Image (tube, rainbow, N blue to C red):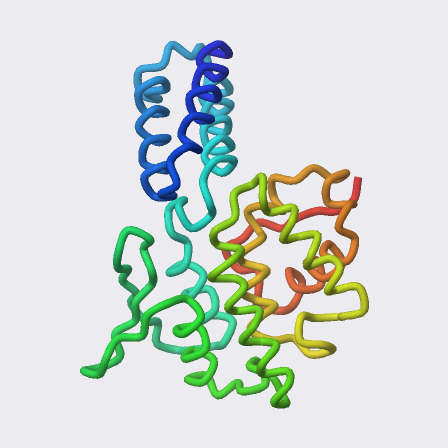
Length: 235
């Protein structure tokens, strides 16, 4: 089994040559299904099957941007609804190969994109404070929402440390992304980097002391964590 994992790892490196993220993800999953057909493995125990599944998921995250991995935006938006206390849950669809979230509002034009829909939900819940309490903070919130969609969601695991390094420097003198007040930007960036933080070892997290401080504040903010597992930072 270990030889097969090494073989898949080598094959996955060639997939980086494909610039299309979705194609790279599809090809990688096909290779995993070919080399590791879980249902017909000759694994001797459930532990072997668990280790194989973990290895395959780890390789997928390593070589594919987060936006190419099965889309989590609808789940994030549902969690945001619960945080905001919205009584009636919305139904989300996706469009295109990148699975961009779509929300149809009555008979009007649909709302498209994670940032657009998230801002709409905040306004629907009558929580303008989450979008910033001044012109400057509102601009900062929108900037970080844009960073989430245009930068973070396109990061591979190899690239995410650059994003975290920049974020760590930014948070050096900040409590939250828009200053001293918790906003929608904190929620969406928290959701976005969570898959990476879960996979990082303690000593890796310690390289980003300001990010870990901020992340821990956000994950303990009432109502935010929901479906996501708690990330630990202590040895």
